[in-house]
Image (cartoon, rainbow, N blue to C red; front, side, top):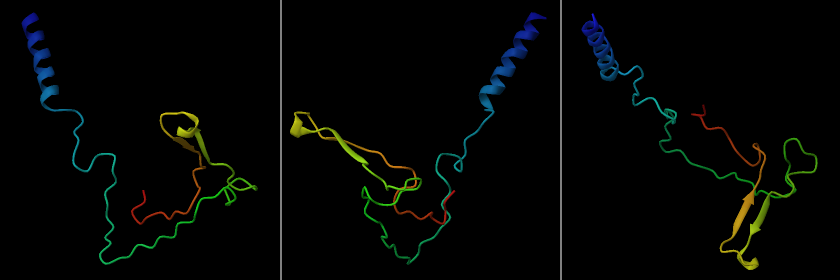
Length: 100
């Protein structure tokens, strides 16, 4: 009986190893499938400059300070390190045709 149990366990483990429960296909992954075709299309840059007084969703005063330079070579740091903090919906954007 012990040999039969060992054989069944070994057979089950081999089946799991040879036939994975989850398989990854080419269509799976972190990137959406691109269906749009641009052909002879043109791209227009409609970007607006980000400034502290530009309108900002949820604020009547505007965007405010959004750029800091906590580390500066002028102040003895080895490199310049800037920090930029913006609300999610700041700036010009249009959702693309393939937007998911």
